[in-house]
Image 1 (spheres, rainbow, N blue to C red):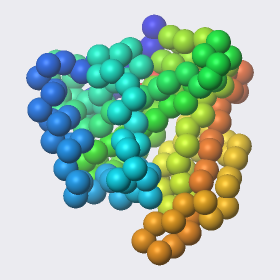
Image 2 (image 1 turned 180 degrees about the horizontal axis):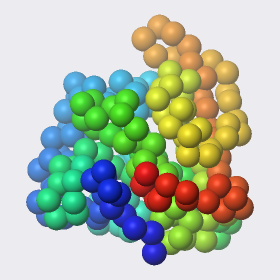
Image 3 (image 1 turned 90 degrees about the vertical axis):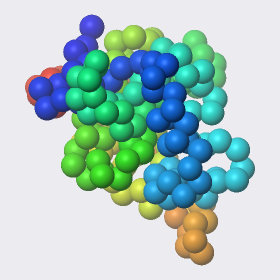
Image 4 (image 1 turned 45 degrees about the vertical axis):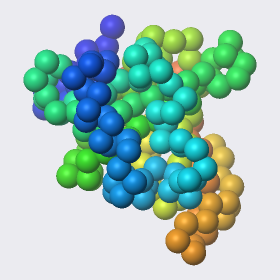
Length: 188
């Protein structure tokens, strides 16, 4: 099993009852800055933050915690779900770091790397995909650093604040992941 704690103190762990209040604050604040990057063009059309369709206690999501599993500050969430048909080995993954104080320092890349490793380890995944938009350049860079490749781009499909953006999907095959190895550890 992959080690879910890295030496620099980033941990992926299941949610606990004590996390409920912090999650509620993150998810219900309509002015939260993360909403500007997580499919902002879908706001008001249902929950597209990656959390709405998953049970909070599912094995298919973990909190991203800065610190140890027992003493740490939750800063975000990773999710995954099988794409239909569920026996096909295609899984969609997502990552969201809620607190902008933790953006741009590599934490998202490390969390995505670990979540990808864990998804390949815990599921029948043959293919992982993640969907984003061309305005979210941090997500595109993080996915590329982990080993994901662009597999689909729908040009000018998203309208946000009067500007058109591309819808972008990135992919990672199990064999490509195996070829990459984990030279720096699962969260490095």
